[in-house]
Each structure stands twice: as C-alpha cells, then as structure tokens.
Length: 518
Ligand code: G4P
Image 1 (cartoon, helix red, strand yellow):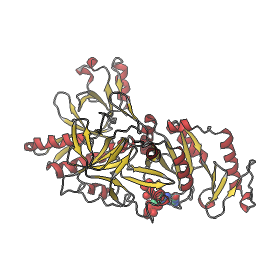
Image 2: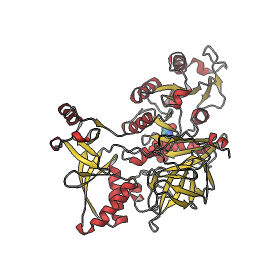
Image 3: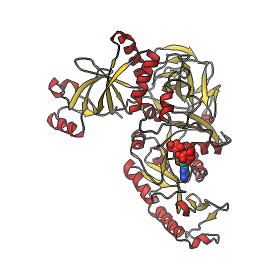
Image 4: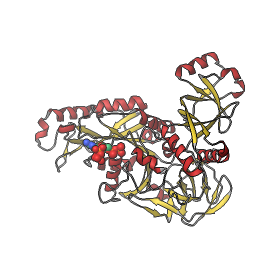
C-alpha cells in the first residue's frame, strides 16, 4: 500500500517558548486558523485542564504550570499538523527534552521585548545539536520591544544559526503599522483591511499617508538591507536547522499568523526517518508499522493505575486493534485502546501514519524509548539521556519500607521521571534531574503510588561528566569537589562542584577523558 500522500500531508512540531512569551496564545490562534476550535480560550494552558484530575497533577496545578506536554492535531490547507506543547517553566523536566525527539521541527516563540531567555536557550540548543529545523515567531509587536535587528542578532549569536526574516515589522507598540511579507512584498496593515504593496524600488504602489511616516521609511530601509545584505534563503539549511525563518507578529491580535502558517507548511519537513539500534534507518514510507514511545504519563486516573504512553508513529499505518510487537521483550500485544489528541478533546484513533502522535493506554508494559512494530523487526535507537544538573540524596523514611522504596525508584527511573545514581562504595542512592520540579513530582508519586515517604537531602547543582577511559580512574580522584558516582548502568560519573573544579581536575588528570550527554 502506498502511504506517501498521507505522509506528505503531515507536519509535526514542538512549540517552545519562555513562559509568558505567548506560546499558549499562538497555539490557540493556530488552532483557530485550522478550524480546530471555534473560539479562543479553549486551549488548556497553564490555567488548569481536563487531565488535571490525577493526584500528582495537583503539583502542576498548585504551581500554575503545565508539567505535561500535550499534543494537538489540526488541519490547515490540506495538511495535518501535530503540535506538541512543551512546558516552558524553568522547572521543566527531561520530558520536555524528550518531546523534541518526537518531532520533525520546532517553533520558537520569542517575546519581542525580552529576546532569548536563558532556560529556553537549552531547548533550542538541543534542537541545534539534533539538527531539528527551527521556525521563529517574534511575538507581541503590538508592544514596544527590542529592535528587529537586535533580536535577529541575538538569535544568531546565542544559537549560532542564520536567520531569514520572512516578514518585516513596520514600527512597534503604538506605532505598529504592520508587516511586509517578503514573498510578494505585500504589506499587511495591523489596523486596516486593505493590503499595500512595495514595488521593485521599495516604493509604495498605492498612495497612502503612511508613505510619509518616518517609522515606515526606517522599516523599508531595514527591509531593503535585509534583502540585500541578509543571509540567503536556503531550503536545505532550513531542513538541517542551520537557518531559521523568522516571522514577526502579535499572537494576541491574531496578526502575522497566516503568513507564518503558509510558509511553515511550505518549508517544514514532512515526517523524517528514524535511526535504529542497528544503525540503519526506517523511512516513514516503509510499509510495516513502527513507532516509539517518548513519554509516559502516569496515573491519569488515580483510581485505576493506568498510564498513557505517547507514541510517535515512524512508519506504515497504525490501525486500531492491530497486533504489535514490543521490541524489548519480543511480546505481541493487541492495541485496542489508543487515543489521538484533538484541540478540545481526545478521540479514539482508528488509523494513524508517520508523524502522528497517539496515546496508548498502558498497565505498565511500556518504557520510555520502547519500539513497537508490525512485520519485520525494528528497534529504534535509545532516546538520548540528558545530563542532569541538580542532585538529591534520597532514602526511605521508614527503613522497613526498603522494598517499596526501591521498587518505586526503579519504576520511576524506567519511566524517565528521574535519573538514578549511587555513591561508589556505600551505594547511597542519589537522584539527578534537569529541573527541581522532577524531585517534587518524584516525592509526591513515591508517597501516593508506592506508599513510601522519602527523605530528600539536596546535593545541589553539579556538573556531571562521564568518562571515556574508566580504567584510568583511581579512588584518589574522587573528592568532595569531584565526586565519583555510578549511573544506573554502573558507568562512572564525576559530579563537579563547579566549572573551576572541573578545569582543575582536567589539568591535574589530563589522561581522563570527560564527556557530557546532551
Ligand atoms: P505562554 O503560554 O508562553 O506562557 O504565554 P501566554 O500565551 O499564556 O501569554 C502570556 C501573556 O502574554 C498573556 O497575558 C497573553 O494574553 C499575552 N500575550 C500573548 N500574545 C501577545 C501579544 O501578541 N501581544 C500582547 N500584548 N500580549 C500577548 P496575561 O495577562 O498573562 O494572561 P491573560 O490573562 O491575558 O490570559
């Protein structure tokens, strides 16, 4: 069977931003454009949501943030677009990173007044390292913000990426007049209906009082400069994530969204192949179904211990009720309960293709990184492990509960909720995370799901480095400033107090080759 036409229709992206840059608003407006929702205010953002029934989700409600990454599908111009929302709070977790492994491109929303903010920078860096194409939407042009060139420069420098403005703003804040669309030099005015156009000499074709305006002249001069001296358009560079198309607009006023969507569907990649453990690739057009699990959401309903495993379809066609094999165990299961996520609802999936994200109800069979397939065996390469940055010693409050304690840790670690380390000689468990919230969720779930109170003792922020040549390590190298621990696979890892301690160590022991994970 030929699925090519289905696959070509699909675009799957993660939407990333610093909190308050306008991610929720933009998502909502994209869905409105796609006709997926009828009115604004439907998207469940940080102000609570329909899944907020489970107990540990209260952590998220109380903190007013969205810990979970949600998925939404909508249609636009014949395309099926899957948006994966990522939590943007600084307490985000490894789930956020893993979401990036399930997409083919990323959209970054930047507040024009703030530019690139530190915590989100990490996410963009992961995109850069994985070669994920990035599309940029610079938001809130209806307010006074940084100058467009300053913003572009910031993106170029911090992300080491070329920029290609697809639209160019005329003024900002109270004097925001509109945007010039680079494709056809039309000007879409912010406050008026009729579009204007620039001719080859950058003169207005129509007569309009704005032509005399200073802000307008400046914008046109800047636009000319961008056209003449800016980075050249290069489709291949977009595909490899080396050039980001940039759009200006105001999500709140639904302005600049259409220009964005039109270009996005033209240039965003269709579902891409994924690599297997055997170092071959599975193409999305491969006839046999395959997919991998990148996120598990536990206890959607506390009364039933069910979990929802999020799967990215990599190839073939998924149909409800089909038998699939779990590569890790070789066991077959029938998938009867699967959902697809729509804007304001979930619905049962009958079929899905490469690029789609579906939720599988799970009673504990799946782990993060698992491959499911039909037909010829495939096993996708492991999802990357991320270098944790904060650590906590953990022990059971009640020593009689050791069994529950270790079972809980094992499951939560497998699920990818937290990372497990231990001290070398005393086997004291240490947890590692990329965000503080992961510890809170861990503590909460240990109590609620494994009936175990834990004692957490902060170890603090550390720089974790793995070692290439483990045989060269001696006991003397482990000090309080370069503490040697073991990860869950018994690999040796140094936890350095700070950059200085790491440099000192490398100078003292040049023979030890350190490396970092993503
Ligand atoms: P997030 O998901 O990235 O955290 O941001 P969100 O969309 O929730 O937007 C954060 C705030 O910024 C919201 O205001 C929202 O209305 C506002 N906003 C989003 N896009 C624009 C824009 O283009 N221009 C302007 N001026 N504001 C924008 P809030 O007061 O925090 O929330 P709300 O009470 O309005 O929902």
